[in-house]
Length: 87
Length: 331
Figure 1 (cartoon, helix red, strand yellow):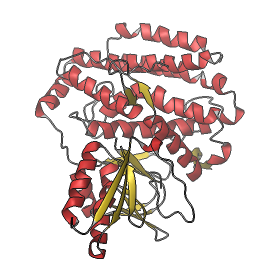
Figure 2: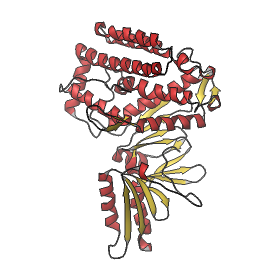
Figure 3: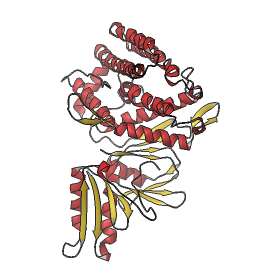
Figure 4: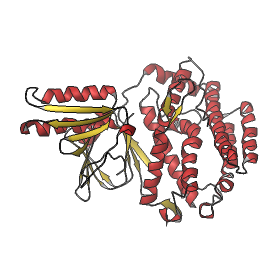
């Protein structure tokens, strides 16, 4: 499944959430990551994120799509990050 | 499905933030999600340390290295995590028992020859004059049952390949990419450079997939096991080369996506340059990720998965559950 993760968390935990997210997904821009995951990987991502956020204060959203082919994305301005496998 | 990471630019690879970090020579930092990476292919100059290797071992990610001329150098093959004593014994038994080895080797060659013919049939449908080559290979295939040794099988495979390659010029009809004859180390012309590069990628693909099974890559059946080399991946590659490598090469050249300017000449050989290599890898990955309807599983399967499924079939053959029937392309 294709996962888009966006987060709005207390400034103390921004780096922590980013660190967890980077293990699974590609950084796209501040507070946004995305990538193709298996259901098991997605479950582990949610588990790991759950360990660092404070439920009463932070908010993390996951949008899931069937696969990368379902994503239509338009961009304005500069490109900051992109999932790439040939560097 | 885990992805392959291809590094053609130079930089430093390290473990950072508990994932994989590539610092390019320009100072740019790129993080790659370790969870999504199945293997890494290094073409450029990469610096790395033991801490990273430890991490890659823990995550089970093999790294394949290629030199400046795109030759395969070797792999960092993390400690076996799926090893099974039972299967290793079975694999060795099938190598040591002459008749069992011959049977398995014959199956690999038969699979290879059938796929060679399948590729040519694809071009025959497009009205290319390749019927004599298809018949030639079919005749070689008929002799497989009589082959009494692995060496004979290798010779027959070589004969079929030669006939097959003679179809490249009539298929492509492109003077910039004349085949002439197969040449290696160094490849003498562009087409040979493409085939050699594709074969290297195929061998490492098979090796990476073997890592995800219980099989030992050091014990091959068609290709003799010797003191240092991985050889099982060469056996498996033989079956898939026509479908994956040769079709990629012929498509890239046929659609003019690779042009003469994507090559350079060095040390008396012809090699892909940076842009050419990128184009090839891109087409290669697309082919591996493309899917087809699997006849038995009744679902869409990618070609990368097809390689893995063949390895499982080999496992089943070794434990005596079901004889190995190599992957066969149907178009």
